[in-house]
Amino acid sequence: MATTTTKLNVTSRESDGSRAARRLRRSGRVPGVLYGGGADPVGFDADARELRLALAGSGAVLDLSVDGAKATPVVLKEAQRDPVRGETTHVDLLRVRLDEKIHAVVPVELTGVDDAPGVKQGGVLEQITREINVEALPTAIPESIVHEIGEMEIGETILLSALVTPADVTVLDDPEETVIATLSPPRLQAETAEEIESETELVGEAAAGEAEGGESAEGSSGEE
Image (tube, helix red, strand yellow):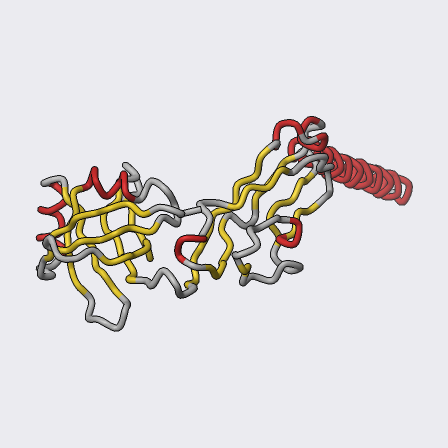
């Protein structure tokens, strides 16, 4: 849980378009926008390294100071990243009150995957849902929801209802309709079986065709 806050100092900036944003990134700074709190949006830029460290804890509450002014609590609303290097290229931050609940997206982490009986038998675990929507006070938002898959067998499914969340966190997604993960039979064996069945049908059809061709030829010979 984000029980502590991290300080982040940023510099206000006017929105000068994508060219100015690229210059900022080349100089080691990341552009962003501050929203919410009943105030107008504020453009800013932050040192890339300081921003990365501040956002290291997902769900963390930041004490944001713009141009050295009094800090205000904020949370990460959205972060854009370079698809190749993975570096943060833009952030949206949201002003919050520590005594008011907010909606947030929290990642789901599955543990014990390699020890599950179904995985040991060659089953394929697929995580369908990697993030869930929750409501909580900003300081109570967990960094992640961790679930131990335990004795999961091939053919079984994990629903959201199986996850244990903190008492002060409300899950907003449907617990009985949201599928977290499935454990399917080995794909290679399934594909091989399908290929064998398909090849068997083709061989059977070819043999039947040859037999019909032979009967037709014999019939023609007898008539002459």
